[in-house]
Amino acid sequence: MSTIGFRVLPSPPRAAARLLEAFAALPTSNISDNMLRHYGAGARLRPYHRGGKLVGTAFTVKTRAGDNLLTHKAIDMAAPGDVILVDAGGALDHAIIGEIMTSHARKRGVAGMIIDGAIRDLDAIAASDFPVYACGVTHRGPYKDGPGEINVRVSIAGMVVNPGDIIVADADGVVAISQAEAEQVIALTVAQKNKEEATLAAIAAGTVDRSWVDKMLREKGCSLP
Image 1 (cartoon, rainbow, N blue to C red):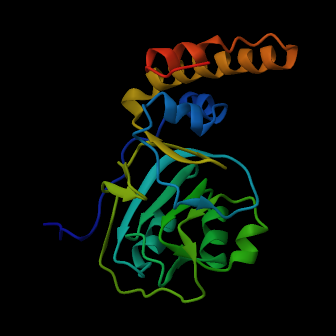
Image 2 (image 1 turned 120 degrees about the vertical axis):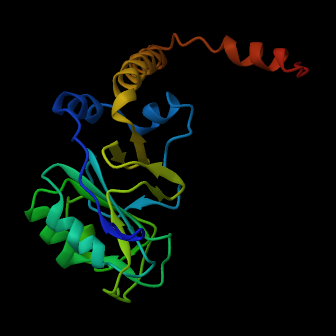
């Protein structure tokens, strides 16, 4: 019998490569818009690496605040292309990962790490293109006592993530998409991206139609001169 709160569960099926490739071309802002802005992490979570997009399958960790024992296990278990997401309760008193753990994760082919908590060794992480997102930085290291769980539902800066979800992260933030809804989200997001590119082209050409602003104001009852 598994011990609820201190257990390692099997990984779900990874997302298909074609879905990950499609999301790699789409900005998180457009993805979020087409999920009615309900499925993204809060602004407290931000990128700390040098730059670059993160796309992969969610490999989740839930841990006691300030403890990284299960995060070490996750790095050893995760498959190439997985994104390790750690729900550390958003606590910033102790770092969950640093240069050594991110180096090991990168060597094993992990796509990136997202920590609802703190990191350390900022200079090394900031100089690297290995994607790392977190809520803050502290020099104080972690404990390694547990408890914790792997491959369970987690909350990352207010965003619910299930193991196996598709994770997309860029300079604007992080979103999670269930594999079952991925095709629909891709189709909607591609359509919006194409529409926005047409708007940008119209702005550049000086032909953009802004009549919708006054129309909306009048519909809302605003008096215009």
